[in-house]
Image (tube, rainbow, N blue to C red; front, side):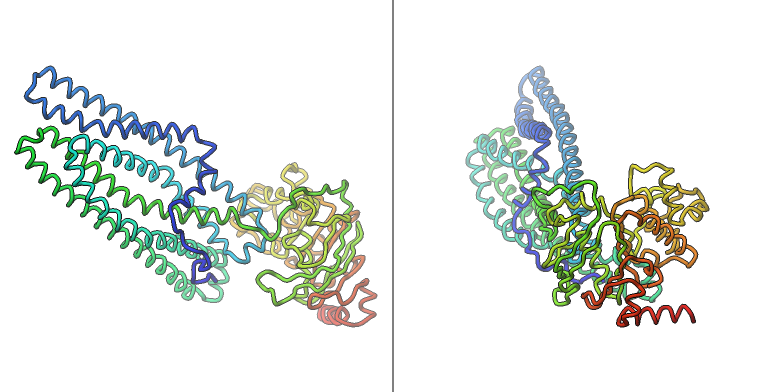
Length: 592
């Protein structure tokens, strides 16, 4: 099940500057960013001009009605400009945020889909999904709102301070005395807020990973009456996530209280002095009103920035997490200049001194110095006890992993010198645990060759003994089979996976316990289909049921990661040893 600590090896975010990681995604849309910025400047300038108009109106009460009407008209015109500018800013900023986040999600998914299984041994899929959804949603709120609001408040703050000085230098100097008292709690508490924001996001990801794992295995959880333990584990992680969020919220609340109190307390004191200046005739009432409005704008901007900084810090943590994934070093990668695979692919496979240990089990060798040559068109069966290394051979051939030593070749070419996509097109796999997607039966089979026609799909299904049960589904081949094929039995899933491999029509066929979930009659029909399909193709068959491999050209016997015997069925039985013992057990059981 899921771990209880959310990625403890990762250092926390230390600065909002981590948001620079978003610049490569924003750069292609710099035109929209510029338009949004111009609208932002326009609205900030209009906001700062409004108090000037108000001052004119206040001081103009003693002037003529015509001039007073002009002042009110100017104030209304400024309001129209403010509304239009705000609308333009909202449109371009929100659109930019949606576009950038869509690009981030695509880039992240593209990256995740190409990472080798070694990566997913270290990180739970649910946690990855959390980054793809929760973190990008947080970034959307920042790009589409918080950054714009922050910039607007910065402009308002700076412009307001300048116009405060223009209105009254003495009062402005008194206001500036408040600034250090406001900045200090923002800096001190902001550091803690950044760490807590990152911790909260990590716990959310851990929660998603735990829930995903339990729900994907819900039948097993229920079968072993593990619901209470699973609920308790999820509750513990959720409570830990809430506790981290509560600490973050409390810190942010304290910072907000301190900043707003200091700002407005200072302004009240300054205004008290300003009111006395009006009484003394040193300021006009309009100037005091103008100063009050600018002071409120400056105070509001400062308080808003203290809140927005928290949002930006959370987004910085999310950005760091996403950039980590985008920049993850994969243990399996394509060469910078892939070699060309000669066409047509004949299917010759060679293992030369291959030794391998799974990344999460470095102390348990899976393969020891394997040497094996498989000729083009040959059918070779890999047999042996569970954990002997048979399926590992197929995973290395698909280059899901690279061996720690040795070389694997396809038609004489080192797989590490080839593009994975290129050589995998020439392989068709039927895994031990068939993967069925939440779409129609037809599209599940067509997954093997997307351009295949309906007639070719149905021909593959017939060859895999799948046509009859598919035709009997409510909508035949167009029936939705449910998430992970929930509508289908284990044997039906297996036959769809076999049909998918048949449709792929690749020169190398990999069968990993491909008939393990079939009844005797279906297995016989599928074996006949495989016999026809294997003609002219290189076929590797991993099997525990020896009856399925008796007709193989060669049988390779594995034990504890080593090849202990090679030969035909009759030869291996005559030699005695592990294969003969397995055959005696299985065929004696069958006879009984």
